[in-house]
Image (cartoon, rainbow, N blue to C red; front, side, top):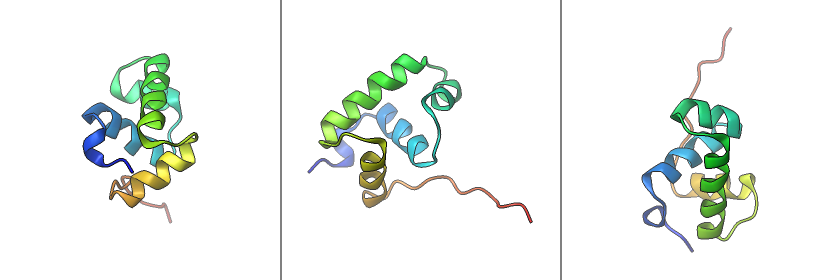
Length: 75
């Protein structure tokens, strides 16, 4: 099983945004890269983790202690 040490800093940054529910476009915009580059990183993340979907990568990330930034819910 993969560990956090198997991912680059950029890959961890992308996984964190993935578990926040962000789209590839939103991730790309936030970290100033192209959507294609986000896809490239996600392909590598999936291969390293041995998963095939965003959901599976997100579950792995949460199990590793990567947390989504919390947002305040408006009243």
